[in-house]
Image (cartoon, rainbow, N blue to C red; front, side, top):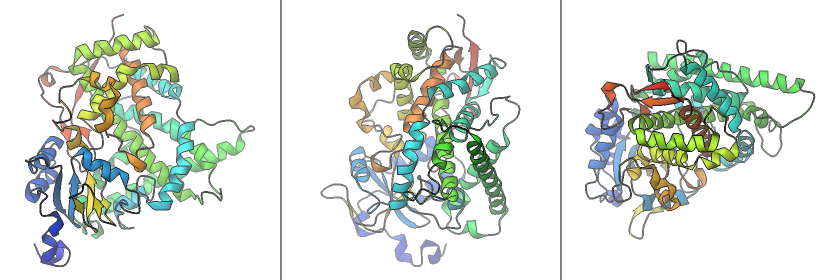
Length: 477
């Protein structure tokens, strides 16, 4: 491997003196785990074993040089306290696949552009938080599952269907037809899944130049992004036509209608391309991560029958012994189900590590620890949630009935860049879980009942269940 690969000279291989005290993640072990698609447990084990003294920081050499990972909640507080002037997100080059697909949506924007996006998106998002709409989509899921009871089903595949159906109606006022059958996957969802799979290809994630080469993976990715864009722009145009035909202006429940109001608004300087980027970011965050969390919840409900029974009793107490669609007040009352979600996200955070940020000014984590200017830095949520000094790893939802516990719970990030979809994700999960508990008993197939850990796919930043199956049986009433 030549010097140029390491950024121009051999000195780039050596960490700055300020980082010498920070333990190093063995690069070969780490790359092996990622490159050969080892489970998330294995990737995280390589990171945790790199810090036997538990100082809460590790460093790793990636394609752009040395980066620091925070694994301690106290250092995380200093990280969250800084704004984009000190810690902006690292932006991919304009021609990088990640930039081509996500553009400059709120998840990837910095500075004034991000603030403008957030100021525009938050009111639109809040107007769209309707549990009744989530309940209608969950009723479709229940109807579909009634045809497939007592059969092991891939839970992540199933949960992606409910989240894409819900998000389609919430974001676009569009029927994704994701719950018509289990035999066919909607074209839009298939396209999106292929894009995400290719973007997370280690060849593109680790190397700093392979995305520029005329490789088959790059050509396929460009074509799929083009098809995705065509779908999004067609949906936007159709929604504009439908809105123009409406005789009265009423409060719209879909995100797209509320966001279209900002096109041409001189306070936002908002374009159709900005809207496309925002919808893509929202779709990605609101679809995959919520599906991952729901999958983990149903796995845990199936694995722990006593917890499932207690959650069902709460659902019956709040909603009655039938499949009622919860309203906003019902959602607030389902506190134990919410605690199950929180404990699940503690054990299996849908986002395991935050995207890297660039240190533009020296970052003081403590009186004696300063991360120098020019470093990339990220926060490893998985490691913080697995810290034995803070948490027991037993699955105990009751620990989240105490608000004090949540100080070290950060599945949606924190600070000024916390996830704007947090409330929607929690609401969606509560509604789906409560209604499913009123209709089905969940169990694991025999081959999965003795698993110590839920199998997880490998990924740099996100967590996905791997071939996890759950059986849904009609509830005996």
